[in-house]
Length: 226
Ligand code: 0O2
Image 1 (cartoon, helix red, strand yellow):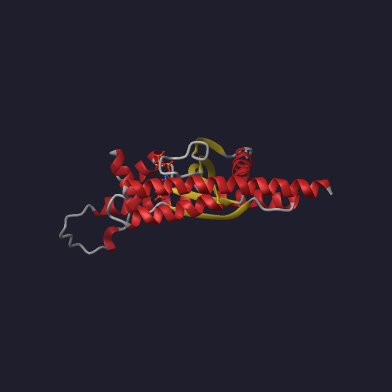
Image 2: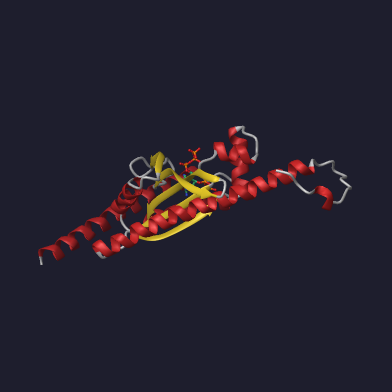
């Protein structure tokens, strides 16, 4: 890409490579647009799955959908941790969670149904799946994580973009949001006894989730009998 550098102040006291800086800056803007578009694609697919469910079964499996682009601080931290240079190219080839979509469902079974319906779209490829519901993290964290790729059509051609989708119940989300806040609130490590209490609360929340699902099935069965 060629830049018109004539508009710039000729003084450059810090001896910055301005051309390189502008090139990288444009690179980051393009990345932002690309991942934002991928998020839109996934959100639309999820909304269609949810509304089809509503018209077929008269209920919505999805409580709400939110999305985020990974923060620059979090991107830099991850690249530094992996020992990878902080450039637009290395972000594109090394990080799969720049675009993130979080899907909050009512029941545990909804999580797997959403994942299943999404996997049936022939433009979606699931490249990684981490089931932290069957195998919770040592912290107690539960969620189904999918890394999928989705095509985004730009004027320059098709780009296949990775998106991280976290799918969990309202109850799992309640725990994860508060636990995340609590851990990041303190500069100290969370003491072992409090970590253990948080983990045990995650187990309690999981059994509540299962009991709610059980009640849901029993009430459904009653309706079916009528
Ligand atoms: P942010 O800023 O939200 O993105 P990877 O290299 O990607 O395969 P990674 O990054 O360890 O490995 O992925 P993991 O653990 O599967 O998922 C990371 C994300 O899951 C986190 O994002 C959280 O959103 C969530 N998460 C994972 N473990 C926990 C936990 O113990 N508690 C809570 N509350 N959330 C968790 P980040 O990394 O925080 O960053």
